[in-house]
Image (cartoon, rainbow, N blue to C red; front, side, top):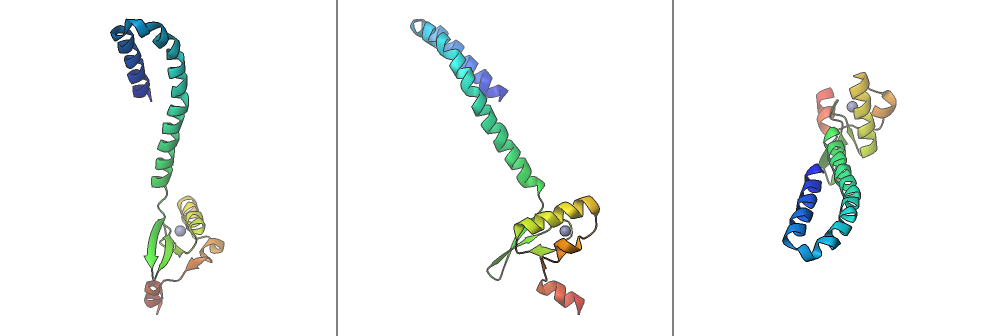
Length: 117
Ligand SMILES: [Zn+2]
């Protein structure tokens, strides 16, 4: 964000030196260039936050028998609904136990069934 501002400022200064005839135009445009930086930097900040949020969730997507399952990164339970997997993960991280209401939505995998028997 500061880098972009520096680049724009440098371009304006270089432009003002290289083209003396455009100097008044550049000086009058400078505030607009800096004003345009605000939404730009907001955009970059928001994109950065989105990427952070994405890596923060450990919910894994597993494709099984043409079905997309979402696995809780903490306890490994699988859900057909991503929202439930995220809920489970949030609960597991905070309480280190299983929420019966949440795990009721979990899908019994074939592997788990085999382990149980
Ligand atoms: Zn979990």
